[in-house]
Image 1: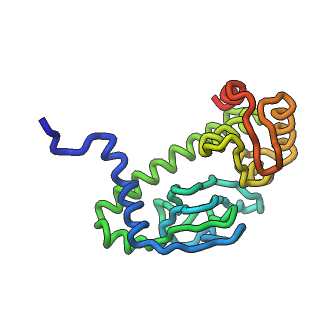
Image 2: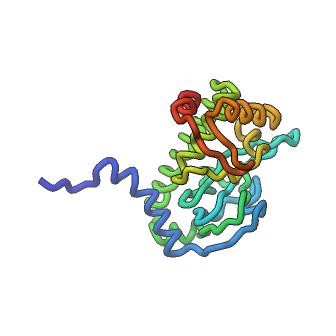
Image 3: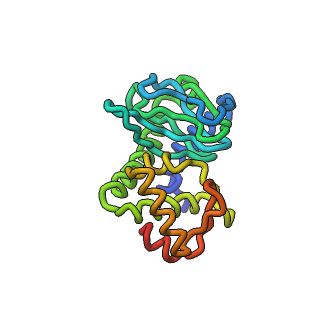
Length: 217
C-alpha cells in the first residue's frame, strides 16, 4: 500500500529543500572579502543567505561593548533566518566567501506564503537547537570541556586529517565565553597531552579521538 502523504523524515527535510531550491534558482552569488560585513546587527531582515564557499561568523555587541560570537556557518549552511523583523546578530565573512543571496519576497513568490512560513519555522527551529546546545555548553561545561567540544565540532565538519581552523583565538574565546588567555592555555594543555596537535595556529590534527570525544560528551 502506497502512502498518500510524506513520511516524517521527508516532512522535516522538505522546508530546508524549499529554501535551498529558491536560493539556487533565484539567488545571486556575491563575494565577500575576509572580515567584510554581510549584514549588520539590527538591520532589517530582507534577505536569506547560504554559504557557498568560506566561513561566516555571526556576532553581537552588548551595551557595554563586549562581543558575543553567535555561531560559525560553513558551505551549505543557511543563515540570516530570524523570526522577527531585525537581525539580532550581525554577520561577517570570517574568510573570503561566496554567498548565495535572495530576497524573502522572491522566495515567497516562488514557494507561496504558507510554504515559506513553514520553511522559515523549520529552519529557525534548527537554529534554536544549535542555540540551546550552545547555552548548555556555556552553562555546564568547564573551560577544558568547552574547548574540546569546539575542536570536535570543527573536526566533524571536515573530512581531512588536518582540520582547518578558520577562526582566531579571540573568535573562539568570544564564542566559548572564555578569555583568550584561557583558550590558549587549554589548547596548550590538549597539545601537551597529545590529544591534539597544532602544525600551525590555523590548523590542527586529532591524535587521541577517544580522549577528545570524552571531553566533548
